[in-house]
Image (cartoon, rainbow, N blue to C red; front, side, top):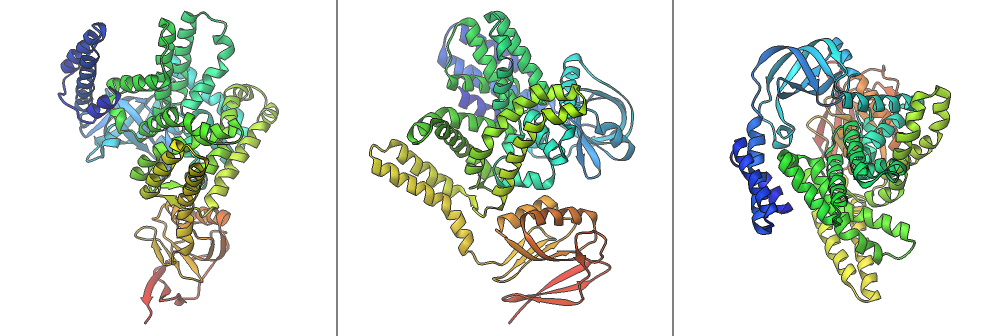
Length: 581
């Protein structure tokens, strides 16, 4: 039923809510009459009709000059000197951008608050399904913000909790503050480009996106109260905690999935029915797909479901096959099964799975839980107490954040390479052989096979011949056996430069060429220096303060089979590749 409901949501039909109502009645009848086969068919039809109605509801917004109230559907996010935010206007959702004074007004607002504004709205245009699945009807530019309102009581309470925790964490430095916000309530808006790339390289990005683990910790915090309530009041209290926590964490797909799973288990406990974890996951997915069929297009939801399924189906058996302390075996089993389960999605959506993710998650994962629990408890106290109390309260927080940040930074420097589709296939085959082996020799052979598969990307990087690695159409990595030159254009995103240099397994950068004298380049050079030894920095002017020099031009740099000619063109450095005979 879960698989068919998911597939049906990807193949919408109908488009009228009357079809949804009819299918819903059919589901209820089949459930009451206890007809499993008919129930599965009815749920599949319900998911397809619900998807059709959901897509039909998203109508392209008409171009207009709007003046009125907008309900913020997300937290404003800094972007390119301004802010970006999703907002509901007259029942439709728009992605709005603001610069200057309007951006200043919006910057400190939070989801659920109402803003009186003036904006120029227009249709969204051609957009992929994953973007349209967020319910967007159009986009707009905010020209003025007149006033704001703090919103409904439950969002006001959630925003108050976030602001209190954030004010208590002011004693942390900027990077630690961003990590803390991501670990506790999933806010990664202030995360630096370097930290984001470190966590991507280490496979730790999921720690900064709240997940089912965070829901479990939130319920654990409320455990002393829950144990003193009867089962009816306990159910109401659990549901209230889930709603509040989901609001605090902005209804992230992984949190919604975990919250619905918890609610399904709570309903089972309320009616006296024991439900297995696998069935809880299946029922939760079905419920979410029927209520919000567009969620199947969200990458975060796909990853959350895959990771949960991997842990529930495989982790127990893998843990039993690993020798050593149980806590270490379980940690390795949970990490490895979750990573393998999401690997196909990561290969499809992104550029592969970093080999460093397995040791990085084993090392950093255990520290994330205590920081999250400490943030929701002592972090609230720190926000209400004087600053000096916050310094004392967050001393353990600083240690935990330092450890996680250090693991991410160290993993980003390891030239272990990326796992591709062939590696994932081999890992699954060899792992299955090891789990089903009945002799010690076969198990040891499977372990050796797993190690060889994991080491192959590193070996491929070691023997690879250096050459020219385009970052995009403007920036390039020039390499031979002796020298590495990184040419950077300001049109290239710093995140792309960091990722490209990392994936090329560059250790030492002999020369950085900044084609323009732009402030964004200064931060990028400093970030590169945290990972690599940089010999020299050339720029068209010396105003950035990163040790840049004015190169003698024209200058020719000779590589193995080509030369790079550097000249000045209209106050910019230009490069030209010349092939050597």
